[in-house]
Length: 177
Image (tube, rainbow, N blue to C red; front, side):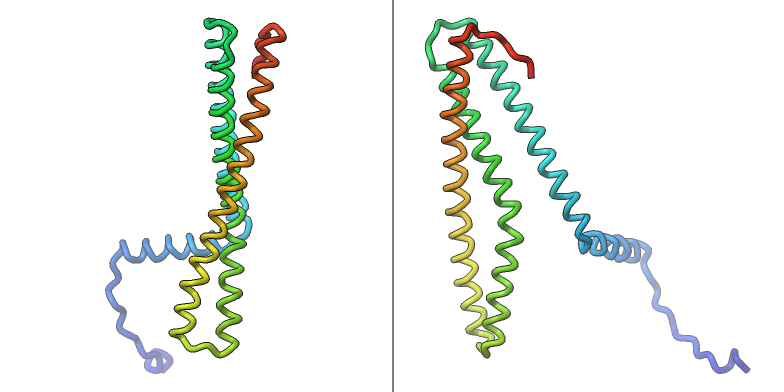
């Protein structure tokens, strides 16, 4: 009797690839919704950036040592090396600031749009305001990032130049990194 009460529903044929894709996408969504996943991604990206910048620093310093030992006491190799270091660390600081600025910018953008919605703005007005808001926020973030990157690049270039020239004048002892 219990078997007669259960109604069997027809099952739709499932394609194995679709089932695998839905399982993998669900797993990906679960992973990406966790805070520790974002922390791990953040730390791994910064580790990669730090490793790349360290390797670049070592290669620029070895190039500078080679150039300063073969050429006369002109300051051009130190200038080239310091500008290269300044630019690389300026770009690195812009990437680091961008990684922090994007989530904060998205939260600000969403908050303003929600507040505009609660104020009773119609949908067409919200779309227009959202486009204007996106352009304003993106423009201001880019301006700040470029300004901060340029400041870091200039400071690193000047400090690098004086460090390299001072190191060369002291006798050029090579310090292994």
